[in-house]
Image (cartoon, rainbow, N blue to C red; front, side, top):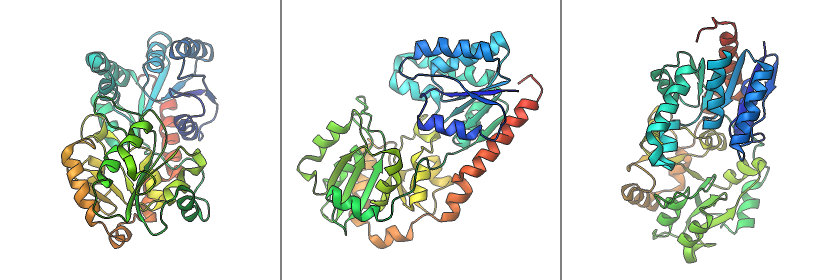
Length: 360
């Protein structure tokens, strides 16, 4: 029995590496082609590959419509069972980008889950959502660190390269800086705006990454750029953990809604592995996992003025001693973000689906 898999973000992406690892405990697996930049063509190419291979199980990482339609049509016309893996609630996520399509996206998510034989959620919240939409079998896999650990001496080397004072208290984030024109925000915007207002000068903001929001971040930094605000640009995947080593605290605010409330995000495993305590707001994960290593601030989103006011007061008073006392334990990393544990768990889940009754 062949298990075929693909990622809607495309080959070579973090999502592709993730699903390839999660199915690695199975025999007879096959990667299917998918190009995120040519979705229509990828749909037809994927459909042909499924029809030719006729896998016993099809596993899709991501919830893109082109890939999802191929899975659902394969289920209806070919009887091919499929499993969906996702880190986002697809309906709210797509609706946030294209509000006019909200009813269509909601219907798509429900049908995608209803026809699926299984669901691999990055969080238990997403698994519960899939079950509410009719998917009977679910498993949680919150992710792990992809890429190499920090290089020896990376903290000192990168701080010197980027011009960050060696004794500064650094709060930062590494990620995709995609601009949201509706809220005039991207990762790091809340942090930069707040640091510019601080009376203290020994605390710096470090935002590592690239995207459509980088120029907006530079404008927001103003004359503080290179003094208390640092925007070094993107780093290679193997340099992510080294970039985090240059920080003292991770910033990870989310919107408390149908998008942010369901997430852990890939950064959570990286922050935990780096020993970084995290500043966030009152999202579910901050209560469920973060009691010992997260600070929960008020506000419904990182662009909420209430969140920024609390962030300013918090950073004004933050001390190195408080940071040291809040570092996450290595046991948390092993128990929750272990790659080996998650691969074994998901492999068992998929193996059970393969031998289960053909009815989902």
